[in-house]
Image (cartoon, rainbow, N blue to C red; front, side, top):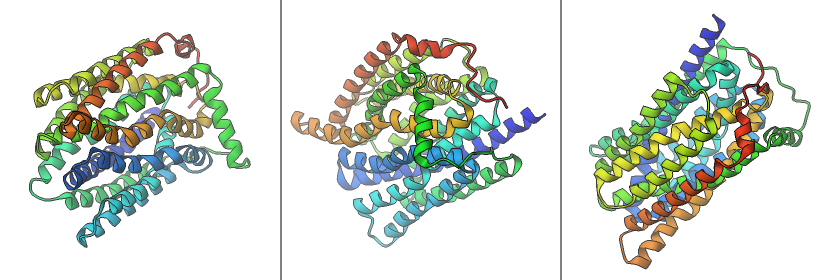
Amino acid sequence: MKKDSNYNRFLLLWSGEIISAIGGGLTSFGLSVYVFQETGSAGSMALVALLAFLPTLLLSAPAGVLADRYDRRLLMMAGDGLSAVGLVFILVCMLMGRATLFVICVGVFISAVFSSLLEPAYRATVTDLLTKEEYSKASGMMSIAGSARYLISPLIAGLLLTVSDVKLLLLIDTATFFLTVVCTAIVRKGITARQTEKTGTFRESFREGWQAVTEKRGILILIIVSSVMTCFMGAMQILAEPMILDFESSRVLGIAETVCASGMLVSSVIIGIRGLKRDFTKILSISLALAGLSMTGFGLKENIVLICFFGFLFFFMLPFANNCLDYLTRTNIAAEKQGRAWGLISFLSQIGYVVAYGGAGFLADKVAAIRHTGVGRGAAAVIMVSGALLAAVSIALYQFKDVKELEGDNNEQTADH
């Protein structure tokens, strides 16, 4: 009975995250279109994305320590609720006619600072609620929530932009934060917070988190390889929009993003229903290699049908990779250390996104200038090269014995529930 009750609480928490993801996707899409229309630069779009992402990366490790020292659900509520401040700042400036690139960068940065509290606490809460047997299915459900910002949001945003502007999207996103806080509050009321020891310093907590992720060499290898992979995949994520906007409207872009992201929905549903039982390293390597090859096809031509086909394949492979990474990590780290461990893992594995967001957009602009083409074809060239490199690294990953050993049937690191 308790098991079913906890899974129901997870579903409520998950529902709140879907709402938040959809709202965040509306803002991300709307601001990307707005910045590109104002500047015509892939680099400017990448700068906004970088500042929206950087606080999450830099603060993920401290947020992980907080998740192990304090009430995880309360941290989630604070992160969701206060992140609305940055969006309100952008909205007010737009209403006053002062929404410059600088203002947008400041607003998304403020919002991201508070959002950084969310991820480690959310992942650790899932560990608190569920049994080891439920992890894989829950990971599939979490992938569905993550796909909502790519599947549902672009279509809604593209349609809304034909009748209104980005201010409406910001307003809707701000409202979703408070709905998410309510869901988390209900879950918090129904479960007892894990007792944590707060006698140690933050530095000692960081050290314990580092020990948790380095005790097994395979975990450290996964983190390093993941950082390289996020660099290549980040190039795809940041350059897909300017590539399409260079020859199509925002409405077509929204439809295309929804079609592409539906691949993530399909595979997430499959994993959510069936789960993955074995061969996690093999599935991880294959899925990422196919994602890389899909990236090379994605940038071949200015053909929206071809783009949607390869984009669908790219997103279809991501939940398989995420599920394998999540399972291999979660089952090899003690439950009481998972908050700080996930914080460090998020920081180290996502450094590649900083490289991609900081350099891919400006590299695309440079390639376009050298080749005397539109910025869209410059973006396509960077995406294709990144895809080829991702496929190569993914194949190399399968050669590591230490990673394969993480699949042992007798992992006892995770605490009993």
